[in-house]
Length: 81
Image (tube, rainbow, N blue to C red; front, side, top):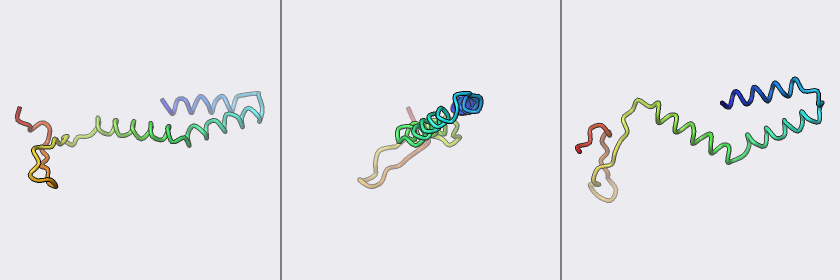
């Protein structure tokens, strides 16, 4: 989706007849959006969610802690229910 938006923006910038001022406005807005901490956080969260969905590693579930510093983890599919 992001690539589509970038492609559309690039096509508009390259095909526009509004001139250099409009190009600078679009360029400045694009830089502000991509440099934004909120955008970076959204991208990071999205990548993590995608990574979790595509992961082949079993999810680990915590069992009862042995002591205050040690917790046993087992794969989610091996939990006794």
